[in-house]
Structures are given as C-alpha cells and as structure tokens.
Length: 147
Ligand code: DQA
Image (cartoon, helix red, strand yellow):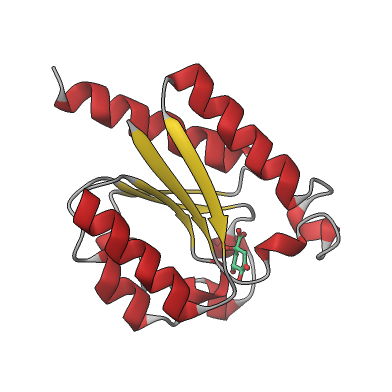
C-alpha cells in the first residue's frame, strides 16, 4: 500500500523557519520519520513538498486517479485555497489533514481550514508526531477496509 505525504509552502524550511512554532527538526528529518513510520506500518511512503499551488493540485489529481491515500499538510493553502479543496474533493481514498502547530490556538486567519470539510479527519498540534499519527490512522483505515 502506497501513501503520499504532501507538504505545502515553506515546509522545506523546517528547522530554520520559526523554530519556536515549528520546532528544530528539518524537512529531511520529517522525511526520514515518515519513511521509518511507513516501514513500521508496512506502507510505502513517498514524501513531497512544493511552494506551488499548481504542482500540489497536480499531485492530488495523480493520487485521485490512482486512489492513493494522502497525508496532507497544506500549510498556508489550508486557509484560502478553494482550488486545492476542489481537487481534494475528487478523491475517494482516505485524506488526513495534518498540522505541526495547532492552528486553532494561533492567529484568527488560521482558524479556518477550507480543506477540513473534504478530509477524512485532521491531526494538529503534535509537532512532527502529527504525521506519525496520521500515517497510523491511514494504516488502520486500510486494514479496516480489507477486513
Ligand atoms: C501549518 C499551519 C499553517 O497555518 C501555516 O501556514 C503553515 C504550517 C502547520 O503545520 O502548523 O505553513 O500548516
């Protein structure tokens, strides 16, 4: 079973970007953690990052066509990208929205997610562990589906 872990704008700068909010771990650390978690859960995990909305939407179309589950940190797209939301609405496999920080505890503009309504569920506020929990949720959902 394959899972795509997709990351939106600025997330490649993890570790140097506002470490008080997002922690000291780098994007490479995040990639390694997701791959390792995938091995533990018997999932083939591919991690990608883009600052470009069009590229992100193309990846979502690819996942929709191939019915691949997605773990998505939409980053700032979360709060305003109806185009990303509409792309995500086309998929049928599980989608877990993740955030490193807890957007509900931050500025007002972060309290809205235009993605949440088309996601299977959301994990936010647990640092990089949010991704581990999201991958675990997908593994459970896939196991449930095959029972
Ligand atoms: C984020 C939260 C968003 O509000 C922000 O724009 C990000 C990262 C998070 O992982 O906590 O870029 O998605």
